[in-house]
Image 1: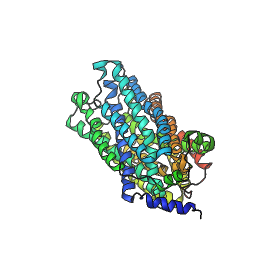
Image 2: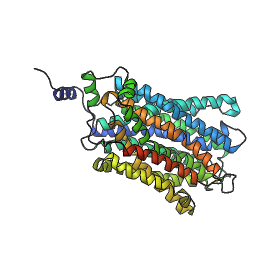
Image 3: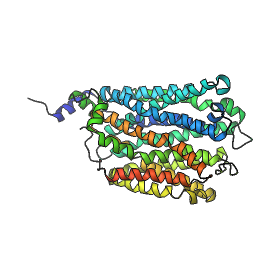
Image 4: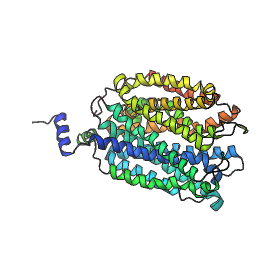
Length: 453
């Protein structure tokens, strides 16, 4: 007598124990927390430290742009990482792929903490920094989609978007830990000039957050090594539907979903990096500089950012149940419309004193939570199991080039062209939102798709 697909799945489930809810949530959350912590540590250092220690061009704006260019290099490496890790994850399983991504990121971040500076070895220092940054991007290219799959492929019926918010929650938590640690170090090593770190901070203090990453990676590895593969992947393996070349299958059979997924993420990425990397530059720039900013000290503005990121975390969690109830597409259309409106309100908000700047940060970060949270379920739902790691990862990370890699660089150029006004930066955000809105309007709802297909 033949065995039905449901019976085969049931037998596979008995042989391969399911991951508990706590294990799924913690494993998807801890990895992305560490990965985003590492990324934020670099982003903060790219503003505070690297222009002085690795790119001393003699011109502050040129040095900052060079530092942001190195920052953006990681975004170019991310799609490559998504292809490599996606191939391994779709052919051999999610578990070991996630372990490899976490190790790669952790080692690269630790090594940044021991790099020599330009004053010690010249241009080799900048080259090594870019190399480590590429390794970070390569690792994050494989991390996010794997963590999202761990969450969504193990989610109960009707709660997939809720579970999908936990890997997304790693972004605000990683930000708070990274910037909180930098804030503590900056307070312990105070500077007489609020626009510049202290000498002790530049000499050795900045290295501590990079070195601390090793401790977090050990915890993350311990959790992830306890994972077992999801039922959907085991079903794909047992039924022989694993693809020899997942990337080729994605491009030939799922190219429409690939393009849509890339543009779904565009506004999210632009908003994400404008509200973190660019805002830290704009907020700290003196009001009487050649390109004026808001004139806050580093400590003050980072505290304001952390308050905003708390709202990022809250609304990331809120977005999950809403996306499960309303649907991903419907929720994101309204959120994207709000992002477009927000982009056009930058000047009145940032010109409203501390109250206005705080409102700007809170509104931007709240919208970030609402748009970022549902992506943990939406992108994996676009693709079948046998190419899901590759498809969701490539969409997510190609969008990082269009959005995140270019956003800080474009923002600084627009801010400079505007004579210190953020008007054109806000217009840039609104334009990215318009492209995402078009992608959402021509897409279909995915909340009821079968994840074992």
